[in-house]
Image (tube, rainbow, N blue to C red; front, side):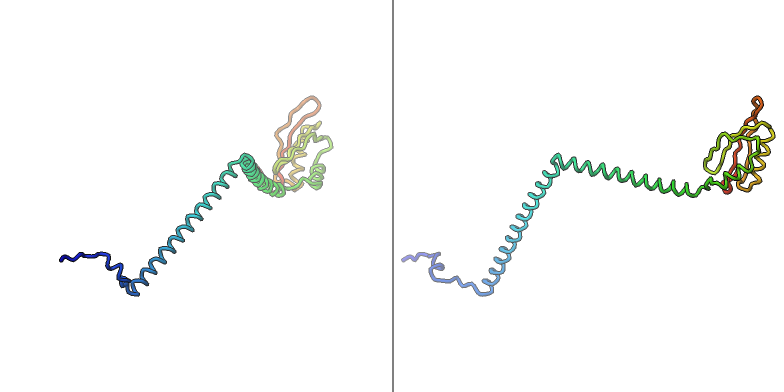
Length: 185
């Protein structure tokens, strides 16, 4: 008689006989797979949400009114930078201006006191630390007298005239004076 081999008899006879350590190991492994699958799913969903928000923001920024506002802000920033440069330059110039000596009534009084009777001052020009007086007189020697009197007043480092130009009954000349502390020539 021939006997058949039944390969399925193991399944009919009950449990295959896994021990508790194997079952615990499989449980831990299965739990890790489930947790990893959950983390992966969370990351994918979060990434999709961030990508959707990114597309929404990009489309908002690409709209015409947003680009015009951005260009207006850029222009305002450029103007602000220019105003700051202007303010710094104005402050520098104000400081330089306040460091110059002031042509005050004392100084004008000293010029008037030194002026001979026949001399007429037709123009007074103040630049930097110098005063230029354009004058006319009836006597040629008045230019030298006026220049020496200005030197003697103590208000100027130096005073000089450029010569006398005679014209008819009068003559003209220009006196240049440098205020004290002006560096002189």
